[in-house]
Image (spheres, rainbow, N blue to C red):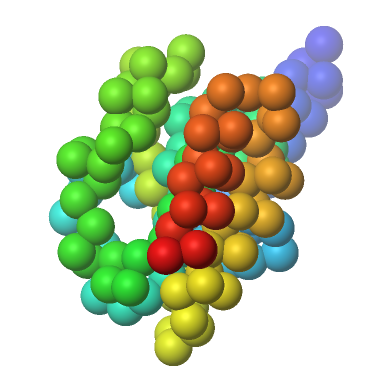
Length: 146
């Protein structure tokens, strides 16, 4: 019994070391920053994509499930707590564990390309029958057409 317990203990340390060595979180092959609380003061000044997430231990390899993807010309100007979908994020079943956000810098990428990336990530990570997915996809289409 002691050998089994020490083996499990050793594996938990290996997992903690592995997570600690990660510098970010991968969504769709893009390395976003490590998730920080949504109300954190950290927001990059450049253009990019962002992923809103909830803590979900069943999601892996890191326990952060994306619930929204968006984009902005200057991420530091995004006021996520004032976002039109903020109340939907807060209503998520795991939102009581906190809302988190990660960023991916896109440099000088045009807005239309950022919108395409956000739509692709959304379709990859959110279920197509989810009403949030349908509403977000139509919002991305309207923004791309403007």
